[in-house]
Image (cartoon, rainbow, N blue to C red):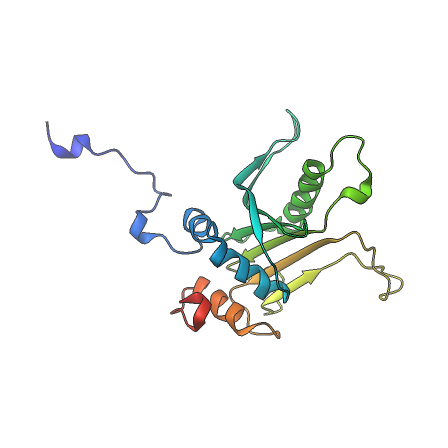
Amino acid sequence: MSNSKLKPKRSKNIKDFDELTITDDFMFGAVMSDPKRCKPLLEYILGIKIIKIEYAEKQKVIDIEYRAKGVRLDLHIIDDKGVVYNVEIQTGANDNLPKRIRYYHDVLDLNLLKKSADYEALPKCYVIFICTFDFFGKSRYMYTFKRQCQEDASVYLGDEAITIVLNTQGTIGDINDELRNALRYMAGQTPTGKYAT
């Protein structure tokens, strides 16, 4: 029997471990499962200080109902103030990103609110997508979305559902230097700065 018959066939979509980069789901999850890596990234993105984070569950699967589409969250995090974060790495450009983000917010809310609980119990929730492409085509590092009144731009809904889409290909925007370096690293550039190295 030849050795070639003993080797399992490898799927064309599966990389060898040494070929993985930070933008591969497995590697992203492995690196970000360390609070010493994940907490600073959240702080750089949001421009705030977070005391402590906990992982509700890595690769958390939320199936709402038998016939409903479930989701698998890359990172599901809760901080010391009860704020919920869902962080996703997205490498494949597709047209359904906005509706996917909407669905993630909706599924998270359904999972967070207990039966008969008051709506006020819904925590502040961030859905953050780190994309290796510029979905909106404006060359920004970061796109932040909050629900805003179309008739009066000074009025916000205030539902505390916030979406942030990061673009590793960005060139425009005032962001933290460490976040900029991390995004460049995720784009395949040599790591620079304290955080990315």
